[in-house]
Image 1 (tube, helix red, strand yellow):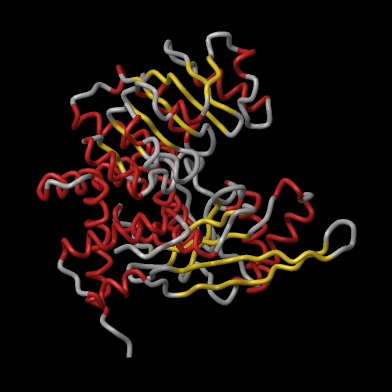
Image 2 (image 1 turned 90 degrees about the horizontal axis):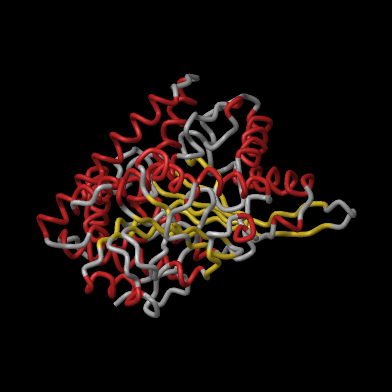
Length: 424
C-alpha cells in the first residue's frame, strides 16, 4: 500500500518506486534506502522589507540522492511550497537524472512566498539570505540549484554572487540557469520544451504518426509549453490547435501561429488574457475543456495533478507527453493505462531541462562555452537514447512507458547504491 501523502506527486513517486522495486526484486531495505531522502533542510529566511519591517519566510532544500553524482534540482518561489512538495520534486529529480543517464542525483528547493508581492530589492534580499542559509550543503560538487517556478536567470545570478562573496572565489558551476554572460548555457531556456517536442517525435514514430500531420493541445503556455509548441509548430510542422495559461484556454481547429501567440504574450506580461479579441478564430475555453479535446497529442505542461480520476476517462488524445511535473495523479494514471493511452512520463519527457543544466555544469567546470548547435545535438542524442531504452523495457515486460521509465531509473540508482555499499 502507498503511504497516505498529502502531495499527489509524492504518492505517485512512491507508488512507481514500489512497482519498479517489485519488478526488479529489490528487498524492503533497499526500497527504504531508495525512498528516503539523504538530507532535508528547513531554514528561516528573515529579510528587511522596503518599509523597514522584518518578515520571516520559510525555505526548504531536500537532497534525495547523491548515489550517482551531485544532487541537482531547481528552486521555486511559490506561496504553496511545502516540505512534502519539495521532497516529491527532489525524488522525481533523482529518477529523471537516472532515466536519461546523467551523473546527478535529485534535489529541490523552495520558499513559500508570493513573489508578486515583493519589490525587486526585497526579492534580491530574499534570494541572498536563502542562498547564504544553504551554503553548508550546496556547491558545484555537492548540490547544484537551478531556476524553477517563479525563479529565473536573475535569481540564479544573485544566488551565484552570494556564494562567490562568501567563498571568496568565482565558481560558475555552483548553479545553472544563469545569464549567458555569467556562464549560462546556450539553449537552456528552450531545453525542457525541446525535450518534450523530441519525445513527441519519438513516440509518434512508434505509433506510426507523422509529426507534420498531428494536432496538439498544450496546457500551459509558459517556460515549457511555449517552447514545446513553438518547436513542434516551426520545426515539425505540427498543428497547435489549443493552448492555455492561468488566464484561460484557447482553441482553434485550424491551428494557431505560435509566433503570433508568443508575440501577444510578450506584449501582455507573458499572458494570453484577451487573445480571443486579438484573434477572432481563437475560441475561449477552459483549461479543463482543453484536457478533453479530440486531438492526437496532449501535453500537460502547466502544474501537477491535472489529469485525475475525475477526468482521465474523458481524455481523447492518443498520446500524452508530460511537460509538467506530476500532471497525472495515481488514479488518473490507472485509468489511462487501462484505456491503453500512451503517456510519455514527466521523468523522461521533461528531462531536457536538467540535461542541458548538466551541459551548463560541465561547461562551468571547464570554464568553456559550447555552441547552440552542439547543445541541441547532444540533447537530441541523450533524449533519443533514453526514450529507446525505456521503450525497449516497456516492450520486453509489456508495461507502460511510465512503469518502464521508473524500472530503468530505479535499477540504475539501486546498482549505484549496491556498488558503493554502506559506510562505515
